Image (cartoon, rainbow, N blue to C red; front, side, top):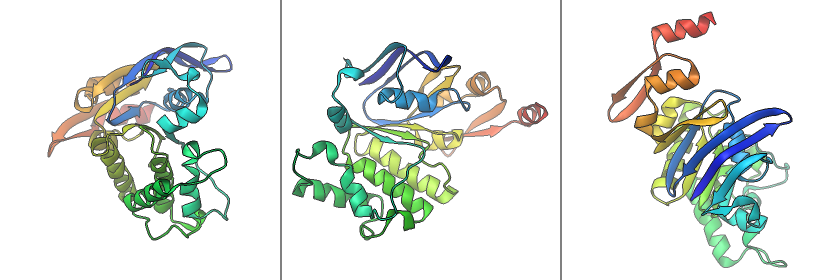
Length: 263
């Protein structure tokens, strides 16, 4: 459904993505993992056309992404950036209404169908009784769920998330990612999320793409990609990977931890 082929993107003269090729099939959760600065966030921005490419192609259903009108693209792809901000006077219900902009007519606002969707997404994220509350007065975990609700209200097939659990404590990390997994597995959304924690990726992602040196070095089902050999190649780090209760667990090996500390 969504693919990049030989993608080249640079910041000035510095190449960040250097011939990256990857395909994201419809449905499920794919985690983008890799060292800092390897190009994970840049890939998401490139998909949206927020970063100009100097080579290669990005296609959605075999159609070049740059040929799709922005309003139509907004109906197909939703984006949750790392940082989100809104004015103090915006309440949660107003924030959610903004997500439906791509569906509104030129002189119209939300329809009954839209408002029903807005109620549903607030229920989904556990904020159904807080539509009247200013967004900036919510707790950190509630605010993140509020922004996820806005993404859901866009009602797009594809959801791009850049570090959706950044700055959240463990309880809310798992709550948010459990919701993300539900979107992929139960609602058929194609979710592509940048994650830093390999254990979170192992617990919630159906597929993993390891990015390094501006390329998608490894890509495939989670249990096939998160291996000691691949971690060593991409992260330059020794780790033990084992199964526990049907889930992959990744722990730094004693030697790997000492080596990283020495460097």
